[in-house]
Length: 472
Image 1 (tube, rainbow, N blue to C red):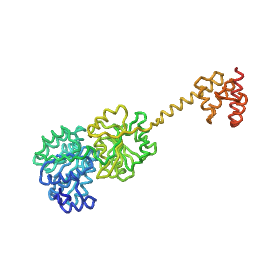
Image 2 (tube, helix red, strand yellow):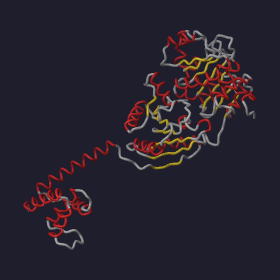
Image 3 (cartoon, rainbow, N blue to C red):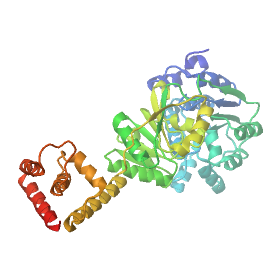
Image 4 (cartoon, one colour):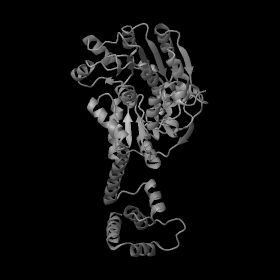
């Protein structure tokens, strides 16, 4: 198989741009897809995240683009804003070599500003389905003359319920277009979509030894619902990740966990759909510039993120299925680098874990983590102990005899430097009781204890003993 981009048919100026960006050798999915796309075939490419799918469709688009035509020639559909921004950034690095223009269209941006930019007829538009349909209704974009259509992360568009919108977009494109479908997994609904709208597509399936990337070290940490937060914090402190993405099931859980991590002293921030687009872009910019160590995100917000240097992925909430698991842990171990994926599971998560392991065709190594009681539990327990201490003090004052439990506690802990336990032992001697195996008289023992204690402690003990004798 050809081992350089020029051998695959990529122009020298594009290959030079790739080299300037540190990319000299094509990945397996690029080697398989680029020749097929350059000859004009439709392609369905199934490959895991981090394998170079973006360049696999970007390079052929740039090769076939005519910069002299002021019209939209290629449309790339993505499920999320962040992925649209990311792909646009990658395309712009190469577009200059071919005199091509690129525009990202996604929600959260000023529509009027986007309309003005669309009036300049960019050659390539990277869009989310919702915002693109908005422009189509406004007639601010014309996709009736495109020659290339890309459905990126198609399985996630299915999971997010975008297939009806995607179909509404496809029917407004020319039938003679070239269609490219890229995905990490290939559910039946995606295959049906391909069969309906693609022309004899070439199937590309990049296999690895396991379904998940082999350079990601995966672990399952068994914990409890009450101990999960403490377990995560312990993992973060012991592993000290360079960059970490933590996945939560809901926006609310992501917000609460972010707050807890910040209170614990971590450089963390959140990424989810309730944030404004400006805030989301700010968070991602900080994360990419290494000004943020931990990103707490929901599945939708972090879909397709490609940030160099992510060393750890933590599944704070277990994914619902193997496909979601693959997409989550694919944030690390990218471009040949190693990474770690840690999934926290409770007893009720075991059925989901079994489903994931069957889906990825491997058993994930397990470890138990020593549970630490949450701060709220410690406060509650401390409050109970303080109340119990005050109650025992009141019992001493009124002369009630200590319980069997307290007698045992006094005998076993009398040597500890705790004023309450020593006083309890003194009470026993005042009542005429002797410790097992004691050889001295109660009077000599009391004198010895009194002499070994600090003055203030002895005074408190003597007062209570005198009170006790009077009550008898």
